[in-house]
Length: 122
Image (cartoon, rainbow, N blue to C red; front, side):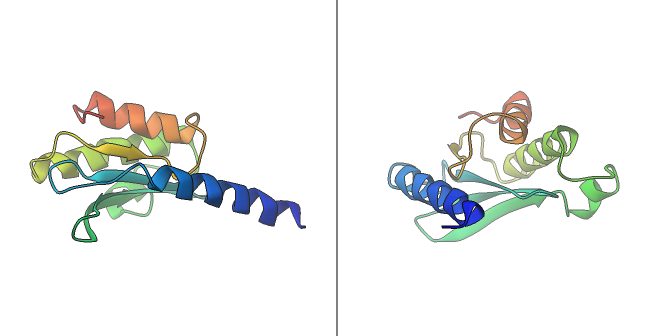
């Protein structure tokens, strides 16, 4: 099997295993993180209604003007701060963190720490 397909398949299996345990509600939504090579995305999801409450990414206009490249830790930190601001606007201060099968290090950790520093509790 192709190495890239195998890597994606293993991450997908880890993600499904985590999703069996992690569930977001309106009071405590799921903070879902997706990272690609060039960008990082996150969103607050209410799994009861199946709705996205807020989203932030390196493609957001206010973040895009501050960075030159979206695939680094500085960009992830800005996205974490942005999603925490969006959560505050909605009156949300507690979330469930969903790392989507990625290891909790690098850009994923920086995003989580930036959101936590902006008073978003896990």
